[in-house]
Image (cartoon, rainbow, N blue to C red; front, top):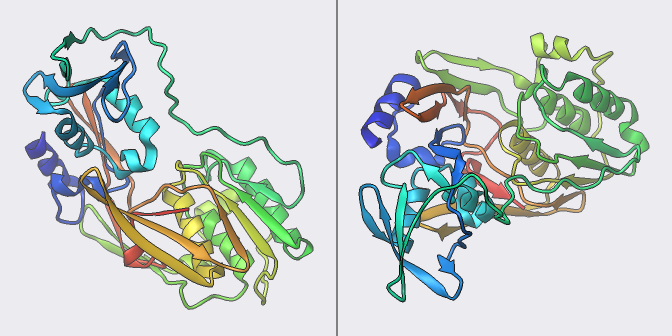
Length: 345
């Protein structure tokens, strides 16, 4: 797998990298799970089964201690699935049948020397949920809901909410932005909203420069866009505020918020924070970056996903395994290099 992935990266991703760095690529995924086959009983992250603990895992190709098995499994995953970020999603994956032989659990050995042979089943009663629960919608004019930033798929919602913000920005003492399970999409609506809130262009607002698979580099002023996606939104007008919004902003995030949703979160942090606190910690063999803020205007609620500045992925099949590989990478933009792959909360 490592060699095959290295070849896929070399042929499709414009920056030199290898399998060892796939955890830091937000749009790179290895889809190796059969969602019709599950371990018939539920495990927790400690490997506890009733009153006993797993000591060893026997896969098709190997025998590993429980903690070592977890580290190998995590090495194939995006950081969004690290147990320190989303333990529930990681356990959902762990309970499924794996098409990667090194991860495919055949037997479990417990600390009382009992050996459990795994017979995968479709019928399960696991208490595991993939998506986070969405809060009940608040029917007030100063609450704005963005289900997705994908213009082609979510034009109606985006147009309605953006126009409401354009017209009423200064009528609200507080604005509430809800990003419930918004996984991203296009940056154009994000830039339009920030232009509305900030008024004049700020120092942190930079051009976007990105590199493509063919090594071509393109650059444009994303804060003055007038491309096809803007036209597709069919906005009645784009406001020209000269001052910055002075009210309070409440931002409701969840761990699904990657890609353009993460840009939106980070832009608001840059624009309305008094102080940004950045730190990191080691979780299951990976360095995870976190950040929170001090601000008189911006209040963060929840926990974001993240992104690494790559995108426009293609799908490549290796037998039953699907590789989702990005084909472009931001070289520079408004995001500070130290904030790629950072989770906000």
